[in-house]
Length: 163
Image (cartoon, rainbow, N blue to C red; front, side, top):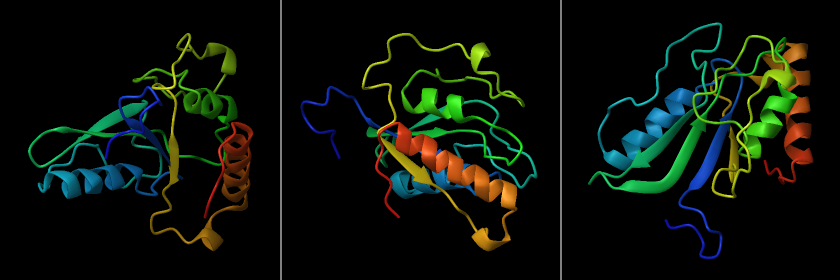
């Protein structure tokens, strides 16, 4: 898969979103296994009530012959009902948050050090919600409301959501 000509990008940037424990990092490891043919976890994962991922991490996927694929996966902190991050998410989608950004426990938009002048190559091209094994009906009301707000943030950035 090669990015469409005229887009002026090196690879497609895919952002994984989901609640804590949904399996975002495990999904990355599954993709890596599929493309390389080897079971070698590249993303840290474990069961936890809080997010295992604490920094913005990007993963360049590789093929079985070790070529870099044109797919870059971004893993972020899992969503929690009590942690607001709408501005952080907007900046991330727009390519303004650099790799290794440390996700704070409480987000103050004024404290986020933005990447100046992001290019289309820095922006997120595809957003993937990872639901894992969780039953949506069993999620807390607060977390359901949080997911609806995340949906609104994504729509406000100009993305079209498909189920």
